[in-house]
Length: 241
Image 1 (cartoon, rainbow, N blue to C red):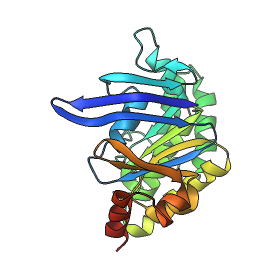
Image 2: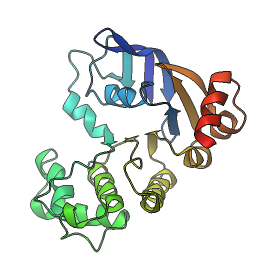
Image 3: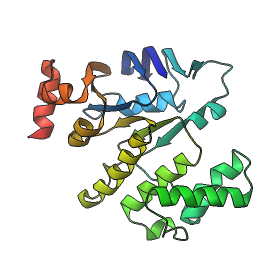
Image 4: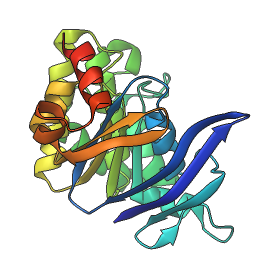
């Protein structure tokens, strides 16, 4: 599981995360909702060790992410992080993009890595795009390429940071369908999303962030359909109207 204990994070004098406590169990799908700047994306980057923290603890399967002796590169193999930006290498094909990390980080042979890449590209519906370079893929296809690249490292947890927000509306569905497949596979998913409908239908729990705090957390349908906190109601009325 992932455990977050009394987490604080600031950028200069500006607090971004203010004393968050949160536990995510294996196999759970947790969606983080809230206004931009409320701390959601920063939390994902702190979990992955990309951002330092001011105080508190983050533990992944009992390993403290920000402890001095933690091998962060090894720990990150447990944590697949997919950003809003696709970050594919433009000079490499889809197959080469996915095969790169297994070769470099895990020491796989070229043949093994390429076979693994083919499997994951097929899994996300890109089996016919193995030789295409990113510029020849649509936004939705590039985002699915990013998911395949993360999956190739066999993570235990997948962190998604607003992966559909940069896509045209007609491309959002194909990415969300891929995420549903990951949920059916039993992977632990933590998603920052503005897609309230997807959060309601697909998440086990939803956490509403407000100014660096978790204002409300609970079962997805309860938080979205019957929020207990006035601030949650105000946010949902605004985004759903």
